Length: 400
Image (cartoon, rainbow, N blue to C red; front, side):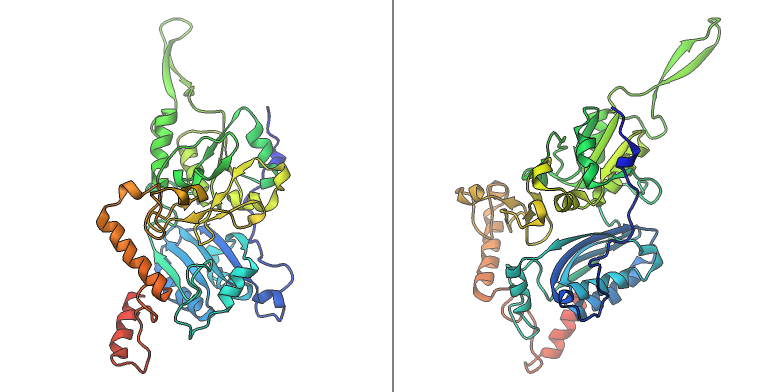
């Protein structure tokens, strides 16, 4: 089957969070709460200079979540009012190298909005465990990679697979000549994946190259085809004929949560000699947002890296909870198992933890139950009227 080129699109431009207002407008919608995941691969050697002003802006606007800065670009997931989130994204893109962020917006339920807006800077309990992110906390980390593959030579800036629009994804993966590969890890694939997809069963993304080499027996980067010596017409001259490795699939289609891991995975496959490499634009999240459930080939729920834990079609919050012992999703059935202990362990990690580790987790959970946060009502802070507040503030600043 021949796949029409019209099914595929190149990288899209910046996706606006809203179509009808600018940051700072009086539009009531600007105060609604949103969660936005974003990334951009770029040549960004002075990445560390962005950390302090970006962190300060997020704190000023009460935008929470996590952002990673690295020499290869930026990757993050943040939560806040629509207006505040837009201001942060505009600030990031004020650096021309980071323009055109790939973005996926997720809705926030009215209940979560009430929790978020019900806490102020004077509240010692922040938003507790029930909010999508703690409103008062943002992490801006400096790392070697924005998504860790552990192979510096693989660069999506130089080479990347063909993007596939979510509306065209079903046609591609329904083709029997297409091998569909889930690029996520086993705790994610366990709760949902596309029908017929191959699961590499990795525990970390950096294991993906090894799986590819074992699965397809791919040759080295400088020897992409097996070479066979053959006699020339006269029998006296020899030439080398390149024969593609028979294990390599004709066409590969990959997907992940938001698209970022597929950028590196597709770049890696191309470097190994794979010819037709496609990946889902915007990832599973964009697919679940754009494709109606009645037409969907997605089965189960999608794990997300925030306190929603999982989402369903339409990006509605799913049914899974999070084990705080191993940060893996747990189902209702898991929570009925004898190995389940809230805040401590679950059937997936109970046998892997020592009793000492479990006891530390129980102490942590007792702090949550007593105060709502780790470290007591002031989270380790002293108010300005407390003795020793200056010294404590210094310690807090140095650990921020």
